Image: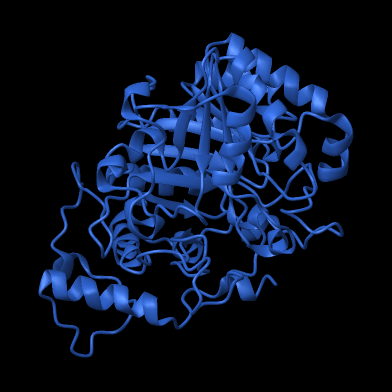
Length: 407
């Protein structure tokens, strides 16, 4: 598996189309130019110290959001994320050091990245990761820092994170039932997660609970789960299951079905504007546009809210959100890339492709060489994922599980 993970780019007609489309847009002729070769400084005519660069892909989308996976290891064994028998974890020398992670982040923030989210695996099992949070918070561009965690180890780190400038935490939690939690994750730690949630909220941090609705596992308790947003000023978000790795063996639940069930319990939902204010005068929840993709007007706020669509129920202190990459795709406004623990710049969850940065870093590349490879790599970012397309496999060609990719 590890050898397979070192493939940089697989042949795919959509990936090749991205390069061709970009060449047409820029008027550039390839005429035998080596595929994937980084531009030299003289060819690219890039300033040695780019200050106001804006990263874009072949489709004109601005890329300003970086998700960094610090490790493929996790202290839980969620059934839809990791096989019960475990995985063959990367060796320590096969993943980026914290210094290498910082260097890539420093280069990318100089190129236009404005938001950084640390993920895993479980990022809190990475030794000394809090020192990285502190350094990232001191970058000259002051990117918005956030964290995704399962919450088991979070309580003891909250003060350090807050002092470092981290104000937004996503906690992955799929159930409030202790027995379901134990069966789903393999451990008995729900009480620790609940304490961390309460403490983070009390400290004034922005807390989002990410729940993956799964048929036959937690579908009967979704309305009760949403009740946490009634009692606390936090967001409860339902993330549609994507058939990647182990998750392909489970069945998710679509946004429309969940919303219908919630409205039966809590009454009509009010759409939420991107400034966080309910707007009941708009006449109900907004529908996605053509082919299930949200409008560009909604996408203008993607850097602030991401792909989530938020609603509010009367009497709730918090909000309810939906992230629906399967039933309501938002690829048109995708603004993100992922840096995997083994140093690959992952461009799309569906595809396994992307430039490998770790070998370059270990070989002593310059920052300008790194920037050039990143620019060229972004031209490979697909226009959209292929989940649900009849002309593509139902399962992603990405053969790694989410703990290895980065959630």
